[in-house]
Each structure stands twice: as structure tokens, then as C-alpha cells.
Image (tube, rainbow over all chains, first blue to last red; front, side, top):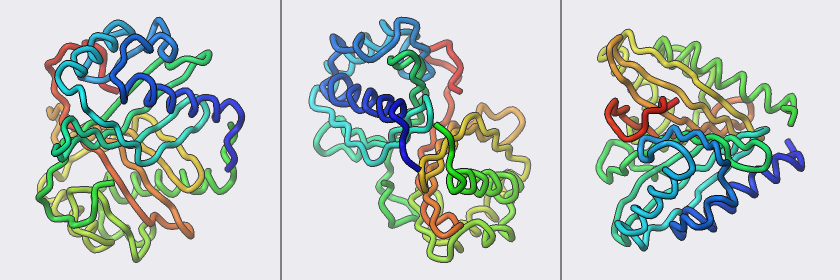
Length: 129
Length: 129
């Protein structure tokens, strides 16, 4: 049940990505977290590390005050999973997102996500997070 | 990096849920996997174990040949994460889904999901999974 030292490093790396890249939408910090041969599976970005930088620059222009609010995160081996809430503007119901990252040689080498627009109406009164 | 015995049991429980409940859409098998006081966060179902049964019965009527194709899964402690592809019909591009389950006392006690309709068009030629 205890994280290994390597698992803790992998989790810390991804928390750093959120703190220094995703939340500030700072493409200039990408190379400290993302491998040169990064494999991108998200529908939002074009492939590779440069594709992520271009996406971040676009997002910073479109929604400079976007907030990424991490709800829970996990690590098993070389994979880190993060469940979070993106609000693009202060009154945005937002997106529910799960990111899965694979870490290799101390950098993020591969990424998958699933992204759901939050509907405020529906049959379930429980919160989505 | 090794799963504890409890982690392996938790992962096995969720794999059983996919094999015996979700893939066959069999509400009669729910009670062997889901706690009586199940906390449902999915937007698709009404709260509780009975809400899950009602959702499964509805889904079996709507899409009896739906397939849940697990792509990768993880466990850390009492949480199990599953990334999978749902195809409701044979030619459905389908849904990309991540489920997060919390296990307590040998049953699934809480569930979150994010669900994304797969768009075949887009800027990224890499597969979503």
C-alpha cells in the first residue's frame, strides 16, 4: 500500500506539471516535464511536445484565468492518474477530466485523457467529484 | 512497485465487475460487487445500488450488444482506475471512459467517471487509447 520511492517521484513529477505548466498555461516550462518523443493521445492537441506547447499557448489566449482543481490522484508503477476540474472562466460549470500519464526516465512520455463537459441538470443530485 | 495482496483483491473485484456486470449488463449480479450504501457520482445514474441496477437494465434494453473493452487499469490502495472503450453498436466510434472506484470492506463503495464521445475527426492522428 506504500508508494515506492520511484512511484513518489513519478507522482511528484505530475504534480509539478500541474503547478508549473497546466495551471499557469506556461509552455516555456514544458521541457522540464515532458519527454522529447512525447506520445500524445488527447484529441485536443497535435502530436508531440511542440503540439502541447502550441495547445497551451492557444489555451492561455482563449482562457487566461482557467483553473485546474485536482480532486484526487493516484500512481501505480510508471503511471500517474489525475482526476480534476477545469473551469475556463469563473462561472464555468467546467470540465471533468481524467489524465493518465506514463513516465519514463524521469519525464512524461505518454498521455491519455477523457474529458466531459459538466451538465448541471441530470438524474443524479450527487456532485460529479 | 508490487501490488499488495489487498490491492490485488481490489483490482480483481473491479475486473469481476466488468466481466460479470458491466459487459453483460447484468443487474442481477450487482450485489456481489457493489456496497448497499454505494455512492454514485456518475451523471448517468440515479444514486445508490438500485440506481445502478436501473441504469444497467435501461442500457441492456437500449444497446444489448454493447462492448466494454478495457485498455489499461491501475490500483493504488483502495482505489481502482479503469480506462476503457465502450461501443454501443458494432459500428459505433464509441465512448472513451475512465472509471474510478473506491473499495471498502471488499465491495465497491464509491464511483466516479468521465465519459467522452469519440470524435473521429480532429488535429491528432494518434489513437485515443
